[in-house]
Length: 488
Image 1 (cartoon, one colour):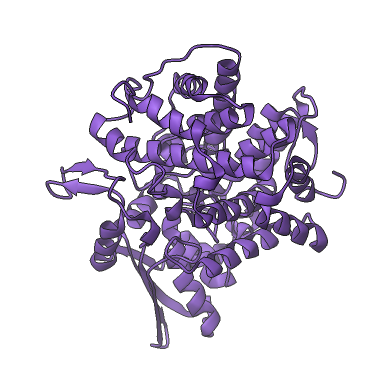
Image 2 (spheres, rainbow, N blue to C red):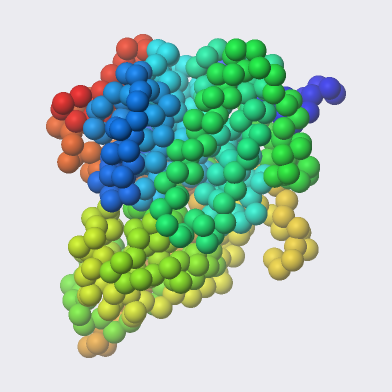
C-alpha cells in the first residue's frame, strides 16, 4: 500500500489488478464448488411460495434477452436475471458463507448474468468471482455488528457486484475505485426483527447486486465516485477495516468458505449431522421420543431464541423456520432428511413435527462454544462481555481454518434407551477434506436440480464447472443453459 493510497483505493486496486496466475489452485476449486452450490440453491428457491412470487413478477417486467432466469430458462435483461436468481438463491438460506459473510449468492449470479451478456472466458469468470468474494468477505467482517449472522451486512452484495462488473467491463484501478465508491453510497444493513419479519430477506442480495452493477457501469462511462467511501461510509471502525484488509494476495478468505448441505442457518450444520446420523443408524419412532437434548454453540441458541417469537405453528414462514433450530431437529429426526421438502406448507402443517419440536431442548455447550471462539477470525479484547472486537487478517492462517461449530445430540426414548452423537465441523464446512467437500457440493447440486434437469445435462454442467478455467465464453454461457429446464 503506497503512502497516498487509502483503504478504498487499496482494495479496489487489488481487485482490478488480480491475475489468474496469482490465485492458488485450492482457491479456484472453492469457487467451482461455490458455483454448483449457488445454482442448487437457486433451483430449490424456485419452488418456494416466495420464490414463485419473485419469478412471476420478474416475468411481467419489460426486459431484453441478455441473460437467463434459472431454472425456468426464460430470457430477460441482465439486471432482471440478477434480481431473480439472487432472490431465489436466498429463499431457503441455502447459500454458502465465508468467515466474513454470505458472499456466493450475489457473486455467482452476477458473474453468470454478465458472462451471458458480455461474453467472458472461464478464467475471467473465476478471477472476478475470487476478487468479489474477497472484497465482500473482508468488508462484511470489518462491519459486522453481529458476527452470528453476517446476512445483516447486506451492503456487501452491492460492493461484490461492483467488483464482478468492474472485471467484466475491464475497468482499471481508478474506475474500479469509483465503482466501489458509488456502490457504497447507499450502504445497507438490516436488523434482526426486519430480517425475520415477512419475506424481505429474499431481496437483500437481489436489491444490492444490481446497485453494484449500475455503479460499475457508470464508472465505465466516466462517472467519478468517492475514492474514500470505506473511510466515510459510517460502517467501519478504522482499526477493524485495516485488520480486515490485511493479507491481500497472501491470505485468502476463500479458504474459509463453507457450503450448506441443509437449508437454514449455518449453526444447524453439525446439529443436523448428528440428528441424521442417529435417525439413520437406529430405529427411532418419533412418537415415542421422550426428549431430544441438543448442546450447541452459543450463537445457535441465540438464533433459535430470536426466531421463536416469530413462530406461528402451521402458518410459520419458511424464512423463520430456517432459523428455528428446534423445528429443524424435529423435522430431520422424523423424515431422516433436512431438505427444501421440510419447508413446504403441507410439512409445516404436520402436528407431529410441532409435538416433537416441543420436546427438543437446546442449550449452550460451553466446551464447543470455546472451540468455536478459538477458531473464529474475530477476537475480543477485554473479555467476552463488553470487550472490544479485533481482526487481524494479515497474520491469520486461513489455509488451515476449521469451521468449528460443534454440537452434541442425545435422543431419549420413553423405554429408557438413549442415542448420542457429536460432531465438530459440519459436512461441507471448511476444515473437512477437499474431496469430501466437493462430493457434498456435487450431491447437493444433483439433489436440488433433479426435478428440472435430465441427468445428462446435470453431469455435463458439473463437468464444465470443474474445468471452468479451460472454458471459452461460449462454454460459460452453456453452463447457464444446461442448468435450466428443457424448454430453455
